[in-house]
Image (tube, rainbow, N blue to C red; front, side, top):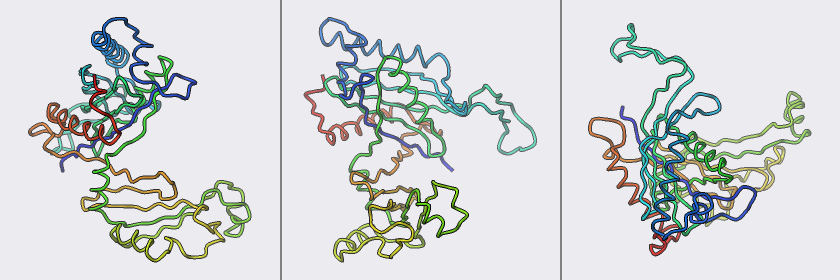
Length: 330
């Protein structure tokens, strides 16, 4: 079975450590790499210094996560200062465990050994957009449905900014049209209700076995059905009913505010996503899967020119959604 390519998108904010107001990228670059020349020359040199600093710190060796189970290293890394874009690849994969290598048609003879300090890597693509006059940026990280190093590369970037005295915030982002497409092609297959930290009286009524555990939660799960999202929401609004009408005050679920409601979606290809309707600003954020046409011929890894073009197009869509105008670009 082919390995599916995925893409995660993050909105970035950068703040000086201890401060609340996000900086523009121009302010950040000027603070770190202050150069008094023409704007174009300044920007080009600042981007070059930023690139070299990242490569120096994370390109010479693999940076491992805290558990020493994965490692990542930046590799090809270029920038286009006129478009505020950094892009390239990093390598990453499993480490910290000895692995035997076999050919898939012979389970008796090993072809090699990966030692404790070896890393079995895959190539990953990334794109970083840091608009000079804006206080937000965009990070795109490609991964695989079966394996990814998103958390590790995000941690690398966070630590890099921390070393400079800044805090980098990453918030997951999915373009609106992708969310709407997922809704149109999905069914709701499960609804769950969870109450956290039941009181001591409630725990005792349920069973004395829970008396000594203060963090006991109660969760009701309703499954075994499939229904279109439109049918669910239309029925709720037209008939003025709730997803949970039963009286379950014994579980401290008297009102909607007492518990968390999670609605689970699944599309025809088995891709799933959850919506927490208990949060006012909650939004469905399905995974983004990339087409196989972006792979190298005969391989399961991304073809860099193709994925670069694809993410460039996606970036233009994101700019429109966040209200970024072209005149800010230079």
